Length: 358
Length: 279
Image 1 (cartoon, rainbow over the protein chains, first blue to last red):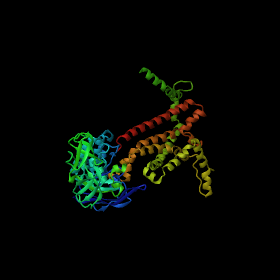
Image 2 (cartoon, chains in turn blue, orange; image 1 turned 180 degrees about the vertical axis):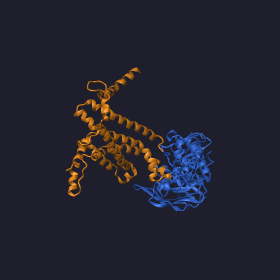
Image 3 (cartoon, chains in turn purple, cyan; image 1 turned 120 degrees about the vertical axis):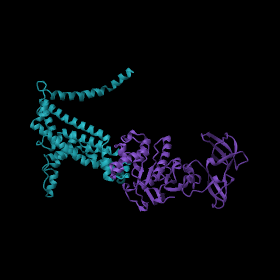
Image 4 (cartoon, one colour; image 1 turned 45 degrees about the vertical axis):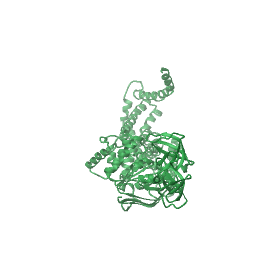
């Protein structure tokens, strides 16, 4: 891992008595694509705005390259923000929008001209210099907003749900575009989103947040395959979260059946949450698996079939490329590697979203 | 189809009648009187009478005083509009409604009454001078001077400058301001390059809405300027009421109209640029 560039230390922030962030600690590395992921109100945008300097934390410090920048105003920080709704200057053409930061810094005309050309090429919009922002589509405006930020050569680019207002196809294209940009520029991206797919696609590191607390920090694979609590498991992708009892190391009882797993260190007869991803549930002929059940729903999803299987009093969500008709008697089998054991939630923010709603 | 069109025309009839009766006909009458003499023959004499020393002086006076008042209104209104539009500060201090109330309260009183009140306040033996006298301070002698007229104009027309600027300011996306700061602009640079250019449309309509009534007023100058200072509005009023010379009154009105149209053309040009590229 590269060296640490930003440290958020014990950051707390309340708005009108409501605590949005509670003693948050986070390290951001050089050249990292870090995503703050969570539902609305989890504190991810507040964290970003504290980084940008638009909000001052109630307590805690923001360190940038070893220097305390907690009280530094936004215009003196070495980072730039791409705002959710682009926030282009409506009274300036595209070239003037991009040149804004450079003109403030009194760069020479030829330097600014070169930078505008370079940035427009980078976001694939050459020839748009004289256009006005409102004559551009949402996707184009967003790319101009990125161009306007990166010409200032920030060491960190902050992106606040930049793709939120775009339609699905454009959003997917822009995801690849952002990864390409990140690699070409070689700078740190801090990206805020509530879209787990976006986070999984682009990030080096995902920070899952809920109710002002960090739930888990890890690589996309790590977050997806080994969620640390029910909230993460539920928020990232579909999952079956089942009450279980850890009988001993490498053996868990779920819905009355014993499943082999690979987790250790939970003690004996400990209540736990068990996460099994729907694509990890194997359906086999009766007698060949661990838990008998019956298929209750079947939907064709294109790449796979989505099925619901009633087994042991629990409705299992199953993704499989082979189809089992509704009413078929099946057995459920799960590879020990694909069973993820978690401690029971200790606080509300660690609970699964669906539990919270019910 | 045709029926539909007909019924729509029928519905518009009252408005058309209103416009013809109360706008087109009076305007036509002003032009008729202004461009004829007492015998009904065509003449430019009434219009050209603006060149006479007395009338030219009244016109220059009116132009000068209304320009000064407009400038003062702008200088007072812009910071006030910024305070009103500062949502964050308002939320923090919970002051928005209070300022708005202080600001709107005088508007509930009649325009004439408010101007009369200033007369009473400013008179040689008026309230302000009595208080000054009580503290053995030199008395304030501004009643019946241009200063009193400017004061009256600014006091009465200030809201018409504040409101359009306020409207323009609240329409600015706060993220645009954040973006400017994010790109390195300090507060002054943000104001000069972003906030002010984006509020220019409001400033222009504010100027129009103050300058035109100030230019044509005759009540303020009559009450606060005494009979010593005649503005073009007073001249026209007196031609209609005292001198009963509708021809001359209308002729001078046409001249005044030219200035108003000029002002509107200038605002239209500026506003168009305001929408476009001002930097």
